[in-house]
Image (cartoon, rainbow over all chains, first blue to last red):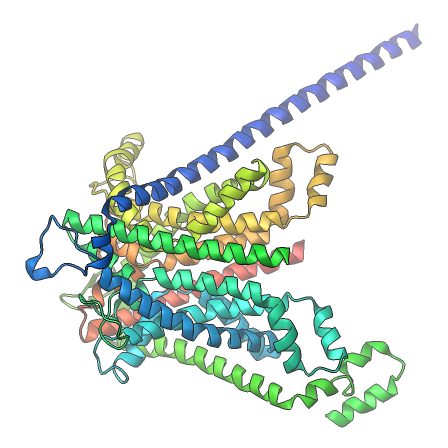
Length: 305
Length: 327
């Protein structure tokens, strides 16, 4: 009799336990699914504004974009027509000149600095490394102020010059390229380095003929990233290049650039200026997209090879 | 010193761990004297560049401190007409907009990264991750255009009245509604840093070893448990790096904030609907017309901004270090 009851209670408790486990399991599934629903909802919340930007830039920008918009210069303020949009050719020329020279200067300096940094050890080396890491995140307006305070007076005689903008953008791009180069070089497998040294090559030869070629795709990606940032930056060039209304290919003259013209138009009150701003936004977005596409093709090709 | 080294290495002739530090092994490096010399010089140049850069920022800000004294930090009145330079409102404007931006971008961004990496089909994953990577480098002025033209009317007519009605006008949702202002600025900043947060966090999540995730599934974890208790903790250093990067961008954003915030520099924010200004936006708006003492004062804003960015980076590094130890 006693054994019966104990058996009974055992199956009873086992049943209870099973039930409990089932309940717990069900709760776990429900909690999990609710959480997943929230996570997916967050993705939708993130996509709404981002797609809204892409769609509105393409939609409103393409209405403005025309050959006249691309080939005429900005409107003359004295014959300003609030219903006409004018063109942006002067800003396109300015951007091409300034960004082209800036990135051309920043590539050799940045890559060389990256090589130096990959070689730098000890306290000084790590300190420089850390400061460069912070400089990437530094507000870009600081580079413009630096050029304004240090160079605009003594070098450019207090007059606006495209070259001052070039220097500001070069300074801004150098840390980007430097850190990209350094991390690319240090992610080259150490066995390659050791094999080169073991064959009797000097460290300089190992760097030039082994490490740099192996790191090339990653360095190129860094360069393209710096280029796409330089193209879109307003703040560093805002105070130093002036506001040229004419297209000129002379980098030392007063210049204009696409982002600064957008900023200027956004401060204005005329609807036509707002519309022109959308047109420039579309141009900038297209450039950034093309640069990004190029870097993707490069990295895909290097992974295949 | 070389003598010293050679004696120790000869003493421990059979000890292989000593080989790398023995002078014989370093012969290759020594033979390449010119290269080493160039590297040394290059390091010096980099150090000089860094010192010049930060030195000039510090030197240019000195007139600003001197003119204002202690008022420079404690006064909320920044007024270029009667040359009052108190920076407290601008610092507050910078921190408030960045805070609103992070409030939006961090939870949404990390969740979006989790869902892109773990919940979507492979093709959708590639599409969305490419999309956010492109948007992460879209110039901030584009976000500014979008903020002024598309979002400002929505904020003015829908979001801000809604917030005011729901809270009954309790702080921080009281006062006049302009559409532009701190709330709009914070939201646009949030959208601006969102792609960065998503892209960098997703990269970190993609680095989590597959074995870790499969192990968790093998132990019977549900999908959400794998996401939040295994993948996210394993990738937390990268995710924190993403948030730091976003914070830095939000603190230093210039031209978009200069168009969106309204440029009111002497108002300590008491409501999310207030007009305001940030450190960087004030520099951008006032610099071209600035003369004399104002130029120096604007230069000192740059120093305050630099210090804030350095503090954020330092704190983030400390958090990362501490987590590395507890791991």
